[in-house]
Image: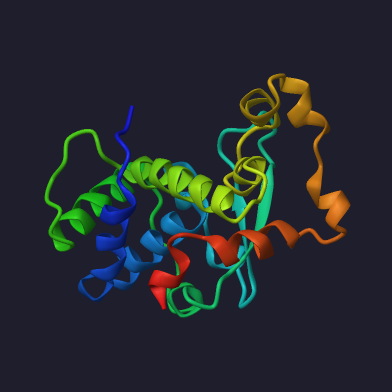
Length: 191
């Protein structure tokens, strides 16, 4: 189990971006924007994104083909467009995370990894959604939670998540991202 990075620690990581390689910046931007799991980040290939959107292949879903399309915020667009993802192993990505921590001045930390950013984003984004009077269940859709976990967490029963389809009500498959990007706690830090 990974420990959670605080919003302040994630901010330190982002602000040290000039110390990183293009690859380190790429994976940190992906992690702090969409809260991707390690397995999801190593699956990203150049063909999965263009100038406007990125498709994330979700790791913890029953169907192996679950994909979520996200808007690429303008703040991280140059980082994504200037790099071709090359990492193929979770171990390589873990070593990269340690290098990022060291370069940012946070040092080695036992119990911390990419999932620490995911957990920190989950907390910070939850607070941001609440502050902006948006439903907390949007967090589950944005971060690729299973419908069952979403239903239990936000509706008290697994089936609530199964039957919830906010994208249908919006009529726009990217409507969720348009809401989230405006209240995202870390995207503006990449500007």
